[in-house]
Length: 439
Length: 157
Image (cartoon, rainbow over all chains, first blue to last red; front, top):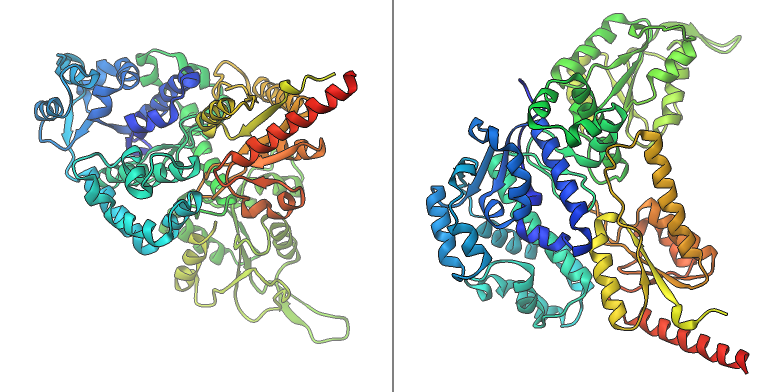
């Protein structure tokens, strides 16, 4: 069965991340969120990756994954570590911890019968974090934000400390509690500075996995929320999925069913619909925040057109087959379903992200007594105006593709004009560029 | 007559910052500042239909707005951690809570700085940016308790 996502890195099982999030008052919320997030990940992806350390050290991780024990042998779940085998990984950990520590006990216990298969991870996470730390010194934005949140020493001292952190840590783990005293010369810093440091370090740590594996992540969590993006085709947006699964009536089923039923749900059309809706809703939400560009494949487009059927066909073909966008909405190809034209137009344009308006010289007209000009059909102008009002003139979401010598609405500053006299393919790169820059 | 020592600070913010809110309430209590927190609502509620879930959300929001408006609430502290790549993020719910507190003439503090998106409104409403340091809030709270205590004593004579 083809899954919408190839692989997912389950970042939220990481121990340091959980420590940061897991205030005692929240434990039940975190368990239920992590349980459902893992179920969504299982339904979405062919393979799920978990840091081996999380599996051994986190009871939450082991507890949630025990549900999937029957499919551990099927290559759906993988543990990741830097050593070449699981035996070596566990042995290396035994050297790192005191004999009476809980971690030592976790690694020394015989749990071989219920452990997912192990995979060697080539890139070292600590090295990745150190490189990222050094890079931030050059770009300075994030570094400045940390300083601003805790300006307890001079800027010069702070910068000098920043450069020395990696060396000063030596064999110590590159975690916030160890970094703070090396960076500020004090154990106590503001909560904001601490949180920004957590962000930098966790971000690099998670990216060391997602980039290595080209994996997606479960994003948009609530109590486990974190700014993390995957490196796969599409991430799995938790909150949006909760909402769309509720809408499609399968949220409770997914939340409480047994493993056999969960496997059946993988091919349930309601799940496919819920997943598609959630990804689109999340993309739109992200774009409204103005920080990310929408992935071109997720854009829902509407083509406004006149009488030039050939141009319409070529544009539709280009969007669908070259740019791999979803099938564009073309009004006349939609069922009437007893609706008036205007009702049909309004409903079909409801969830559209971008409108491509084909202005072709279909009519001829002008002022009475004046010289006539070629112009687009009046319904095209009406629909153009409608989309400018709906999507915003300066949003870059209304693309005006014009052909031939025709009267063009001239006061639409902010709307993107592209000439298609030489055909859609010739203007293709310009169209693609505009679509990929949509936020 | 309100007991001045029942004065409290209502903490609000995104549920993703809930762990931070709990930490802050403990830090403030150590300084003698009493706090209330929103309920850590279940983010899933799998058995609820869409309309039941909306109703539940409405009830939760309304209940906390009532607590913010309560005369015992001295101030609102919005925990505006960075989120979605936006510094000092304030979401729609938190902004609404700030507006309610402002309309009730409560003091409003932001844990971090004032976010760019709402700068005009928040500056006009005299919202205080703590930039990660709670001292200002603690000092104002203590002064307000002292003042209220004096007024009570005067009234009781």
